[in-house]
Image (cartoon, rainbow, N blue to C red):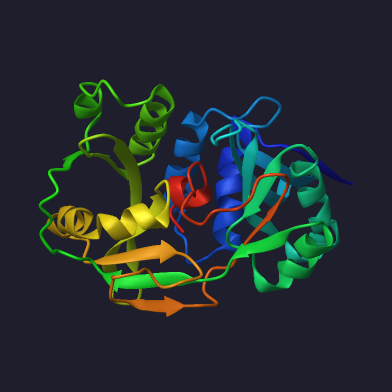
Length: 283
């Protein structure tokens, strides 16, 4: 008998072992650390903490993690479903995991890293592509004299009166996830930026992956100031999920790299990967 149920804390050792078998290039430490961060995330009301699992005779045989939040302009529920793996002899039950995890029709679901063989399944379940490229560039270190200032520590954010409460929560949460979080204060307004340090194989080159900014135009406008900040911290390349090259920034667009899919009422935006596996686990 195979059952599908939410993952509990007591299940995590078996889930880590299953994920390591399903994604052998990711070590046990990677999954343990990511699940610890996921345990600290506050899921949206009605959503589970970790995701769902398939179980047979008390043993995990399938897993689908979910990361939910109510971040966004309309405060609607958004859930990133990720790390979908089912042991080969139980693959017939794989669609049951997605159906169970994505059953709230009022929520928006995101799948950022679907395996090629799963795309027909999620497409049949109503998922549509909203991004299909990655732009990679050396960080810009061109000096800017616009008077803007960067704040990157929680104690610095606490001293900024104009920082909205919701953005303060966004920055604080992702700081705890291990991201690099910035508040760029201009003369009349401020902008949040969030990056995740990544190492690109096989040379393990340190890069900064964009997790969040209000709009790509904001990143284009402040690329020099942000680039110097990243370069000082050893990140020499910038990775931005987008279908287009960034303006005034030298780099290369990989048009079919890392396709992303969603289903639900919210529109997908590649510059908003807050509260997703990219932020918590690092893709």
